[in-house]
Amino acid sequence: MNAATLSLVVDTREQAPYGFERFPGVELVRAGLPTGDYSLAGHESRAAIERKSLDDLIGCLTTGRERFERELERARALDCFAVVVEASMEDVARGRFTSRMNPHAALQSVLAFQVRYGCPFVWAGSRRGGEYVTFWMLQKFQREHEARQDEAQAVAELEEIGRCRGGKKPKRQEAKHV
Image (cartoon, helix red, strand yellow):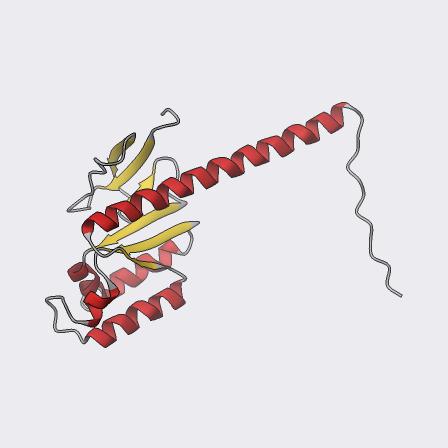
């Protein structure tokens, strides 16, 4: 994988996967993911995005609630996780879905899940918006991960240089209590 390539993993159960055609350098790999619909190759246990159409989301708040909550519970172990909704909050508030669920109850459930599981729900507004958010969140995670790796490597190299020159780490001074 070269620097311009972003290797995204798409869960094999994802029924309507994004193609990411408008994003150059994206390589798609189909594989089973334990959590979410999209991840980064090599980081499947650290980052994931769960995609939801509006009707999918409402289904997860009604008949599929227990399964969805188990997924949100698993997602707590990840460094980066979000539910990307291909609709707006207003779409939910106005009841623009096929279920008979009360729109207020739907929004209250989403807010409760965000608090309970520490998981953001990103209102992307549309499928195109969902693809955009998914790509850029995973790309930002990749960049942040690489920056932390570079920083850790630089620190290790500086420590090695210090050891080679006979340097010692300075002792931490204890605060004196009066």
